Length: 269
Image 1 (cartoon, rainbow, N blue to C red):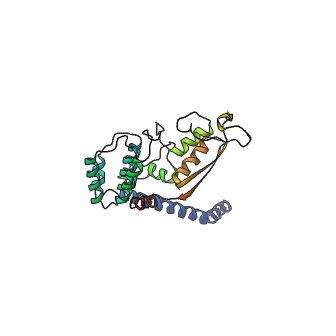
Image 2 (cartoon, rainbow, N blue to C red):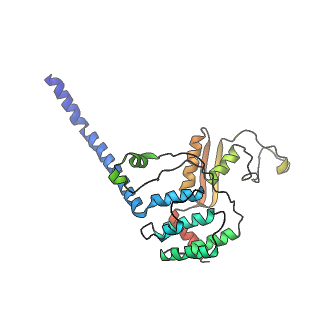
Image 3 (cartoon, rainbow, N blue to C red):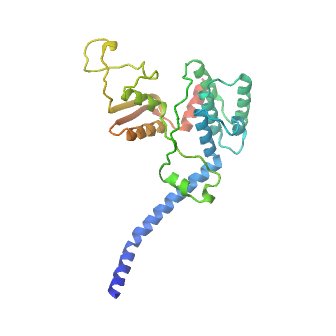
Protein backbone atom coordinates (compact mmCIF):
# COMPACT_ATOMS: atom_id res chain seq x y z
CA UNK A 1 0.00 0.00 0.00
CA UNK A 2 2.85 2.35 0.85
CA UNK A 3 4.52 1.51 -2.45
CA UNK A 4 1.29 2.25 -4.37
CA UNK A 5 0.85 5.64 -2.65
CA UNK A 6 4.48 6.50 -3.35
CA UNK A 7 4.01 5.67 -7.05
CA UNK A 8 0.93 7.88 -7.27
CA UNK A 9 2.72 10.74 -5.50
CA UNK A 10 5.71 10.39 -7.82
CA UNK A 11 3.39 10.42 -10.86
CA UNK A 12 1.62 13.55 -9.59
CA UNK A 13 4.90 15.35 -8.97
CA UNK A 14 6.26 14.41 -12.38
CA UNK A 15 3.10 15.68 -14.12
CA UNK A 16 3.10 18.96 -12.18
CA UNK A 17 5.20 20.93 -14.76
CA UNK A 18 2.86 19.85 -17.54
CA UNK A 19 -0.21 20.90 -15.52
CA UNK A 20 1.38 24.25 -14.65
CA UNK A 21 2.13 24.87 -18.34
CA UNK A 22 -1.47 24.06 -19.27
CA UNK A 23 -2.70 26.45 -16.59
CA UNK A 24 -0.36 29.16 -17.90
CA UNK A 25 -1.72 28.76 -21.45
CA UNK A 26 -5.33 28.79 -20.24
CA UNK A 27 -4.70 31.93 -18.18
CA UNK A 28 -2.95 33.55 -21.15
CA UNK A 29 -5.83 32.89 -23.55
CA UNK A 30 -8.40 33.94 -20.95
CA UNK A 31 -6.56 37.23 -20.34
CA UNK A 32 -6.38 37.91 -24.09
CA UNK A 33 -10.07 37.13 -24.57
CA UNK A 34 -11.02 39.32 -21.60
CA UNK A 35 -8.90 42.20 -22.92
CA UNK A 36 -10.54 41.88 -26.35
CA UNK A 37 -13.99 41.90 -24.75
CA UNK A 38 -13.09 45.03 -22.77
CA UNK A 39 -12.02 46.70 -26.02
CA UNK A 40 -15.27 45.63 -27.70
CA UNK A 41 -17.32 47.05 -24.86
CA UNK A 42 -15.42 50.34 -24.76
CA UNK A 43 -16.01 50.93 -28.50
CA UNK A 44 -19.41 49.18 -28.62
CA UNK A 45 -18.18 47.09 -31.52
CA UNK A 46 -20.94 44.56 -30.92
CA UNK A 47 -23.50 47.29 -31.66
CA UNK A 48 -21.66 48.31 -34.82
CA UNK A 49 -21.42 44.68 -35.92
CA UNK A 50 -25.15 44.18 -35.39
CA UNK A 51 -26.04 47.36 -37.30
CA UNK A 52 -23.70 46.56 -40.18
CA UNK A 53 -25.28 43.10 -40.53
CA UNK A 54 -28.77 44.61 -40.47
CA UNK A 55 -27.87 47.27 -43.05
CA UNK A 56 -26.47 44.70 -45.47
CA UNK A 57 -29.43 42.34 -45.00
CA UNK A 58 -32.00 45.17 -45.18
CA UNK A 59 -33.33 44.46 -41.68
CA UNK A 60 -35.02 47.03 -39.48
CA UNK A 61 -32.69 48.99 -37.19
CA UNK A 62 -33.49 49.22 -33.48
CA UNK A 63 -32.06 52.72 -33.34
CA UNK A 64 -31.63 55.37 -36.01
CA UNK A 65 -28.28 55.57 -37.73
CA UNK A 66 -28.01 59.25 -36.85
CA UNK A 67 -28.34 58.44 -33.14
CA UNK A 68 -25.46 55.95 -33.32
CA UNK A 69 -23.24 58.42 -35.17
CA UNK A 70 -24.11 61.18 -32.72
CA UNK A 71 -23.43 59.04 -29.64
CA UNK A 72 -20.07 60.27 -28.24
CA UNK A 73 -19.56 57.01 -26.33
CA UNK A 74 -20.09 54.72 -29.33
CA UNK A 75 -16.93 53.90 -31.25
CA UNK A 76 -14.17 55.89 -32.90
CA UNK A 77 -14.55 58.31 -35.84
CA UNK A 78 -13.37 55.49 -38.13
CA UNK A 79 -16.12 53.20 -36.76
CA UNK A 80 -18.77 55.84 -37.44
CA UNK A 81 -17.48 56.54 -40.94
CA UNK A 82 -17.33 52.83 -41.78
CA UNK A 83 -20.91 52.33 -40.60
CA UNK A 84 -22.19 55.25 -42.67
CA UNK A 85 -20.29 54.13 -45.78
CA UNK A 86 -21.89 50.68 -45.51
CA UNK A 87 -25.29 52.37 -45.26
CA UNK A 88 -24.55 54.67 -48.20
CA UNK A 89 -23.26 51.88 -50.46
CA UNK A 90 -25.98 49.33 -49.68
CA UNK A 91 -28.92 51.75 -49.70
CA UNK A 92 -31.19 51.09 -52.65
CA UNK A 93 -32.07 54.77 -52.67
CA UNK A 94 -29.50 57.39 -51.76
CA UNK A 95 -30.45 59.73 -48.88
CA UNK A 96 -31.86 63.11 -49.81
CA UNK A 97 -29.58 66.14 -49.77
CA UNK A 98 -31.13 67.41 -46.55
CA UNK A 99 -30.67 64.03 -44.83
CA UNK A 100 -27.14 63.78 -46.19
CA UNK A 101 -26.29 67.18 -44.74
CA UNK A 102 -27.55 66.02 -41.35
CA UNK A 103 -25.32 62.95 -41.55
CA UNK A 104 -22.35 65.06 -42.63
CA UNK A 105 -22.84 67.42 -39.70
CA UNK A 106 -23.04 64.51 -37.25
CA UNK A 107 -19.93 62.91 -38.76
CA UNK A 108 -17.98 66.16 -38.56
CA UNK A 109 -19.08 66.66 -34.95
CA UNK A 110 -17.80 63.14 -34.23
CA UNK A 111 -14.39 64.07 -35.64
CA UNK A 112 -14.72 62.18 -38.94
CA UNK A 113 -12.87 63.06 -42.14
CA UNK A 114 -15.45 63.34 -44.96
CA UNK A 115 -12.94 62.61 -47.75
CA UNK A 116 -13.90 58.88 -47.90
CA UNK A 117 -17.56 59.85 -48.31
CA UNK A 118 -16.70 62.30 -51.09
CA UNK A 119 -14.89 59.56 -53.00
CA UNK A 120 -17.70 57.02 -52.51
CA UNK A 121 -20.20 59.59 -53.81
CA UNK A 122 -18.12 60.06 -56.95
CA UNK A 123 -17.63 56.33 -57.36
CA UNK A 124 -21.34 55.58 -56.95
CA UNK A 125 -22.24 58.30 -59.45
CA UNK A 126 -20.03 56.76 -62.15
CA UNK A 127 -20.74 53.08 -61.65
CA UNK A 128 -23.78 50.93 -62.12
CA UNK A 129 -24.05 49.10 -58.87
CA UNK A 130 -26.26 46.10 -58.26
CA UNK A 131 -29.13 47.22 -56.09
CA UNK A 132 -29.39 43.89 -54.30
CA UNK A 133 -27.00 43.34 -51.39
CA UNK A 134 -25.09 40.19 -50.65
CA UNK A 135 -27.28 37.19 -49.95
CA UNK A 136 -27.06 36.82 -46.21
CA UNK A 137 -30.09 34.54 -45.98
CA UNK A 138 -31.22 32.49 -43.03
CA UNK A 139 -27.80 31.02 -42.52
CA UNK A 140 -27.83 30.62 -38.77
CA UNK A 141 -24.97 31.32 -36.44
CA UNK A 142 -21.52 29.77 -36.32
CA UNK A 143 -19.48 30.48 -33.18
CA UNK A 144 -15.77 30.61 -33.92
CA UNK A 145 -13.02 29.18 -31.74
CA UNK A 146 -11.96 30.03 -28.22
CA UNK A 147 -13.21 33.61 -28.37
CA UNK A 148 -16.78 32.47 -29.06
CA UNK A 149 -16.53 29.80 -26.38
CA UNK A 150 -15.59 32.52 -23.90
CA UNK A 151 -18.53 34.57 -25.15
CA UNK A 152 -20.94 31.64 -24.92
CA UNK A 153 -19.83 30.36 -21.53
CA UNK A 154 -18.19 33.44 -19.96
CA UNK A 155 -19.42 34.91 -16.72
CA UNK A 156 -22.09 37.60 -16.67
CA UNK A 157 -19.52 40.00 -15.23
CA UNK A 158 -17.25 39.61 -18.26
CA UNK A 159 -20.01 39.48 -20.88
CA UNK A 160 -22.23 42.24 -19.50
CA UNK A 161 -23.02 44.77 -22.22
CA UNK A 162 -21.73 42.63 -25.10
CA UNK A 163 -24.18 40.91 -27.45
CA UNK A 164 -24.69 39.59 -30.97
CA UNK A 165 -20.99 39.42 -31.81
CA UNK A 166 -20.98 36.04 -33.54
CA UNK A 167 -20.17 35.38 -37.16
CA UNK A 168 -22.91 34.26 -39.51
CA UNK A 169 -22.33 31.90 -42.37
CA UNK A 170 -22.79 33.76 -45.63
CA UNK A 171 -20.90 34.08 -48.86
CA UNK A 172 -19.26 37.36 -49.78
CA UNK A 173 -19.54 38.58 -53.41
CA UNK A 174 -16.16 37.10 -54.41
CA UNK A 175 -17.20 33.72 -52.97
CA UNK A 176 -20.58 33.81 -54.73
CA UNK A 177 -18.86 34.56 -58.03
CA UNK A 178 -16.38 31.74 -57.50
CA UNK A 179 -19.15 29.30 -56.63
CA UNK A 180 -21.07 30.20 -59.80
CA UNK A 181 -17.97 29.69 -61.94
CA UNK A 182 -16.74 26.49 -60.30
CA UNK A 183 -20.17 24.88 -60.25
CA UNK A 184 -20.97 26.07 -63.80
CA UNK A 185 -24.14 27.82 -62.61
CA UNK A 186 -26.02 30.18 -64.89
CA UNK A 187 -26.27 33.50 -63.09
CA UNK A 188 -26.51 37.11 -64.34
CA UNK A 189 -23.64 37.92 -61.99
CA UNK A 190 -21.23 35.70 -63.95
CA UNK A 191 -22.83 35.10 -67.36
CA UNK A 192 -20.63 37.80 -68.94
CA UNK A 193 -17.37 36.33 -67.64
CA UNK A 194 -14.91 35.30 -70.37
CA UNK A 195 -14.28 31.60 -70.89
CA UNK A 196 -10.97 30.27 -72.19
CA UNK A 197 -10.04 26.66 -72.81
CA UNK A 198 -6.36 26.01 -73.66
CA UNK A 199 -7.31 22.67 -75.17
CA UNK A 200 -9.28 24.44 -77.91
CA UNK A 201 -6.73 25.91 -80.33
CA UNK A 202 -9.19 27.33 -82.81
CA UNK A 203 -12.62 28.85 -82.89
CA UNK A 204 -14.19 31.91 -81.33
CA UNK A 205 -15.09 32.19 -77.67
CA UNK A 206 -18.78 31.70 -78.39
CA UNK A 207 -18.07 28.42 -80.20
CA UNK A 208 -15.98 26.90 -77.41
CA UNK A 209 -18.00 24.18 -75.67
CA UNK A 210 -18.27 24.85 -71.97
CA UNK A 211 -17.03 22.30 -69.50
CA UNK A 212 -20.06 20.63 -67.93
CA UNK A 213 -18.21 19.18 -64.96
CA UNK A 214 -17.66 21.36 -61.86
CA UNK A 215 -14.13 22.61 -61.35
CA UNK A 216 -12.18 21.38 -58.34
CA UNK A 217 -9.36 23.94 -58.26
CA UNK A 218 -9.37 27.72 -58.60
CA UNK A 219 -7.07 30.73 -58.25
CA UNK A 220 -8.79 33.92 -57.12
CA UNK A 221 -6.75 37.08 -57.66
CA UNK A 222 -8.10 40.53 -56.81
CA UNK A 223 -6.59 43.42 -58.75
CA UNK A 224 -6.77 46.14 -56.15
CA UNK A 225 -7.51 45.90 -52.46
CA UNK A 226 -7.90 42.45 -51.00
CA UNK A 227 -8.59 41.62 -47.38
CA UNK A 228 -8.41 38.82 -44.85
CA UNK A 229 -12.21 38.58 -44.58
CA UNK A 230 -12.49 37.56 -48.25
CA UNK A 231 -9.66 35.07 -47.81
CA UNK A 232 -11.26 33.48 -44.74
CA UNK A 233 -14.63 33.34 -46.49
CA UNK A 234 -13.06 31.45 -49.39
CA UNK A 235 -11.28 29.09 -46.97
CA UNK A 236 -14.61 28.33 -45.28
CA UNK A 237 -16.20 27.78 -48.69
CA UNK A 238 -13.48 25.32 -49.70
CA UNK A 239 -13.93 23.43 -46.43
CA UNK A 240 -17.69 23.26 -46.97
CA UNK A 241 -17.21 22.10 -50.57
CA UNK A 242 -15.05 19.13 -49.73
CA UNK A 243 -12.42 18.33 -52.34
CA UNK A 244 -12.13 21.85 -53.73
CA UNK A 245 -8.88 23.81 -53.54
CA UNK A 246 -8.84 27.61 -53.69
CA UNK A 247 -5.81 29.92 -53.75
CA UNK A 248 -6.39 33.61 -52.96
CA UNK A 249 -4.17 36.54 -53.85
CA UNK A 250 -4.39 40.29 -54.38
CA UNK A 251 -2.23 43.15 -55.59
CA UNK A 252 -2.66 44.97 -52.26
CA UNK A 253 -3.75 43.77 -48.84
CA UNK A 254 -5.43 46.37 -46.61
CA UNK A 255 -6.95 46.34 -43.16
CA UNK A 256 -9.98 48.46 -42.29
CA UNK A 257 -7.96 51.47 -41.11
CA UNK A 258 -5.74 51.45 -44.20
CA UNK A 259 -8.78 51.17 -46.46
CA UNK A 260 -10.46 54.20 -44.89
CA UNK A 261 -7.18 56.11 -45.22
CA UNK A 262 -6.96 55.18 -48.91
CA UNK A 263 -10.52 56.37 -49.49
CA UNK A 264 -9.66 59.59 -47.72
CA UNK A 265 -6.67 60.15 -50.01
CA UNK A 266 -8.76 59.41 -53.10
CA UNK A 267 -11.49 61.79 -51.94
CA UNK A 268 -8.95 64.62 -51.62
CA UNK A 269 -7.79 64.27 -55.22
